[in-house]
Image 1 (cartoon, rainbow, N blue to C red):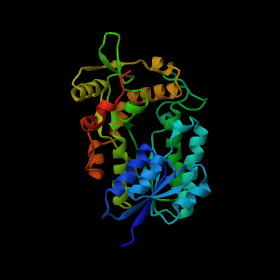
Image 2 (cartoon, one colour):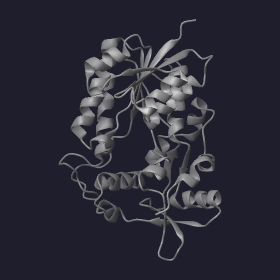
Image 3 (spheres, helix red, strand yellow):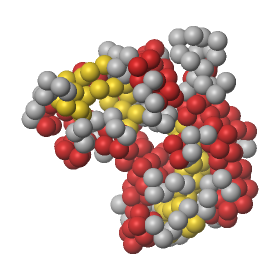
Image 4 (spheres, rainbow, N blue to C red):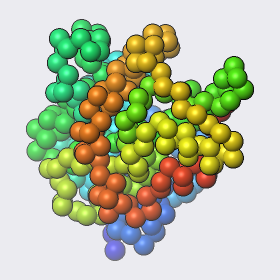
Length: 315
């Protein structure tokens, strides 16, 4: 049987890599995987090739190159990574290039990794949070959400996949545990007391695999995924159980977080405030039960911590 090819943009990243590994872990399944990366000679790309993936080179901003990479594929997983460049214009150009390439290549099903356009909830003139770059509230959300209509407009059957905060950020983006002046461990993020949908990055890829397995069932629809909806206090309690040492949640005021000065601080500060202020909407759009229905291996925060908890750096 000839297997249908799923082409995966960003295949060496957290989301794309999870999808590549999920397909490779299902050798009797209906799909083969084509991993698309800028640098096929990178250690991560070489590891995917060694595991059995077809690895091809393409820059996702180059529509012609992506169309060649998508050629012959049944499905395509499309994802952009704002934090490579911090540019909404670049993000938009990459999203449009992916959508146009999928149409040009005749892809039959696209799964587009997206987020809400926060401006549908918070008008630019709303002073609860600053407007950034003159026309965004949460730039890395807004351009993805804006691109949903562009994907649909190509006519390619597209599932818009609303992702969640992924717990792997705790290891990589300075969002982990910190030792306070009192010697106690603190988990410091601007979350208030409301729940935030979260997920393991690998589970995003498994969910995308599950959507492709369901054929056209979710084409033309927007679906959201999460492993759990947790407050900061609940996440700190999970860290306490995993580490065997008390961890407390230290809430950070949104304005304070925005003022920290690291690249993207204002964007992330607005993101956390958006997630907080519209927590009910954000959670409602990301059903844990639905997520488990397309990914029976879905991890809880405790499951994820059992593997990764001690890799979260202490500063």
